[in-house]
Length: 105
Image (cartoon, rainbow, N blue to C red; front, side, top):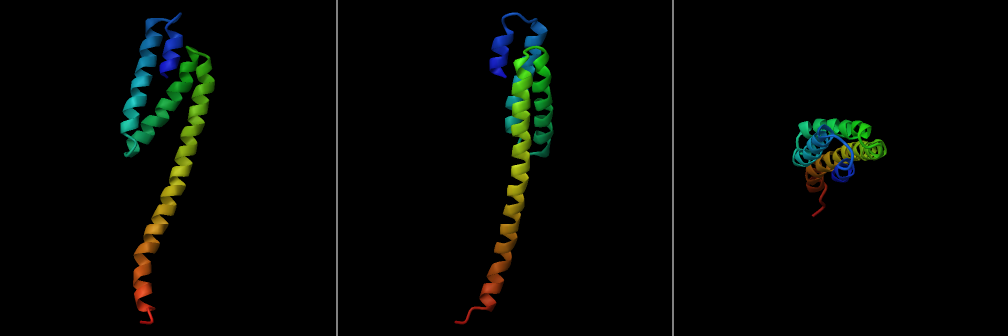
């Protein structure tokens, strides 16, 4: 987003620059909120805003779509990883009891 602001500085209005600055600030705030579900909602909103900033810098249509794809991929892979982690924790909690009962010593 910072590079898009550099491109917009040449021939766009102050309003377009302010909107870009707000989007860049939201990107930074969102990085700190990712441990909470609100961070995921804000991140999705930021992705939509990045694509919409393509009205100012047409290249942002492509870049916003690329980052939105990465955002969605991170969401899907993260959910799969959390499911695997939960299964491993459940298995680890259940396995010591079984191994103590079946220990031949």
